[in-house]
Length: 312
Image: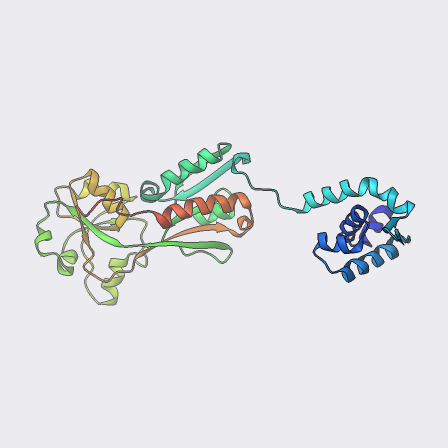
């Protein structure tokens, strides 16, 4: 305990000054290496003498001559200072050294449109990580709280105060319908509100932009044809039917490349879908988490929702 008490009474920065003085044996040269003024180094030497109860150096015509006490300390001082520097200096981050489990919650359309290449990059740069990608559900925030999930990348998220969030991009909502649908010839808001809708069952009235528009403008809601559990169920339900669905643009472009469907702009001033990354505050300062979320977030920010394809 006496050794600990001695350390607590000493500014550890002074040990570095003493190390340089022992190497240079000259106040001016030591000050230059330490990027300090000569008076600052002289003041530090005075504090060292007081703390160690020894003059440490004697001035001679050649410079500073160490006392026996200073020479005795010199042998181990460089090693100790080096170890202290290594202890308090953050290690260089290397993804290849990471290991453990990482769980991401997202939407299937975001995985297809933006995230798959970035996840490939994460796995290539950090092969020791075990990646799990799952669908975001109602328990997503609870899973984030309980450390069962590391990151959420999704749309229409209202983050709690204890969560950090990053807005990644705004994505337009567009209408998806059969390629031969007769409404294409006279497309407008009247046609949209007349057609039977395929809607996500997860969307409450508050989250559904079309129903909100109807409520604000005192319009009758468009007829509901079907509710589905996820976006992937929508395209086959639109083929050769009168039904229509309001979906994110990136999903619509993907669907139109695989199904005989058309993508039309929403004929109403509807708010865009905000895509966000959300994580718990305990992960904010983690270098590994920062690297992961930055890699995935950048894929969404710089991605092309149209996938390089024009409208169907």
